[in-house]
Length: 357
Image (tube, rainbow, N blue to C red):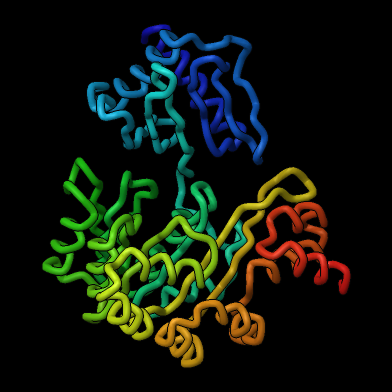
């Protein structure tokens, strides 16, 4: 084992031991891990451009991948190290140097009860058809939530589940269902190509890692329309903003048709973020929209700005706004008042909620 390999493995092991979410390899800074939202240097060695190139190159070598794939400016892949764990890698160029961020992937499939995912979200796996979307910023836990839903289906239903991921993070064993996991670059050239092919693979459930363009969105909506259960993600916050984002990527002459399709096929939108707790950990906060006739009418009529009103009056069915979720966490003293305000969608509304509490 080379000294460089020993060093990389040391960083990966330290990240795993401290339950770090990410590892940063960037010139001008020591290799750093993020633990419960805090940046913690692994040592006191400040990386030069040559150091970061060597370390990133070693990450590539561990994956038997050529670093020339970084010539385009950025690259995504995953590595698995026996006895340590799996990591999702995004390598990129910055300031004329190579850098990488490695996201730790838990070794075992997540237990929704242990990571505070409400049962109303896991129960979305009981849908037989339609479109279920998870939204939020990078690192908000969307992939983890989806893994819980896929595992619920895998454990309870006789289905063929096809996942299209970039890269594959959680590895699902065959249980009651059969699982086909496809990875961009290694197994297919694009989300769109894999999604179109999936319709010929007799799937019951399709997971699309991310809906990046209007062609992929159109194919996902069509798959849901033709009787499949489709899961996917978007980097948006809030149900209304998500619906508007989907519709806006289409040309104006197609938007009414897409709005009608969404009103028919959309089952639920879950927006999530991870917020720091009083004891220095992270806890998920959710906005949950589960489509009913009132919401379908709002989508069809283009009145997405009224969705929050329906969520606030439908708590008995499991729905909630993000600010309701944050206020509840604050009331239960899981997070501080300042955290609730910082992560709120409507600052003044949150002030009023906390004053009322």
